[in-house]
Length: 67
Image (cartoon, rainbow, N blue to C red; front, side):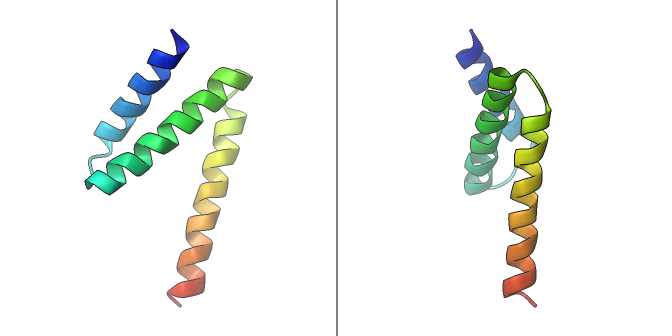
C-alpha cells in the first residue's frame, strides 16, 4: 500500500538522521511530504523543488536573523 510505504520510508528516513525528538518529528514530516510528492507525481522533481525551497527558507532565516 502506498500509504504504508510512505509512513515506513519517512520513519526510516528520520531514524537514519538521528537527532532530538523535535528533529526526528521535523524530518519525519519532511519525509512524509517528499514521499507523497513522489507518489502523486511519479517524479523526483517535485521533491527536489520542495527540498530546495525548504533549504532556501532555512538559509534566508539564518542570514536575516544571525548576521
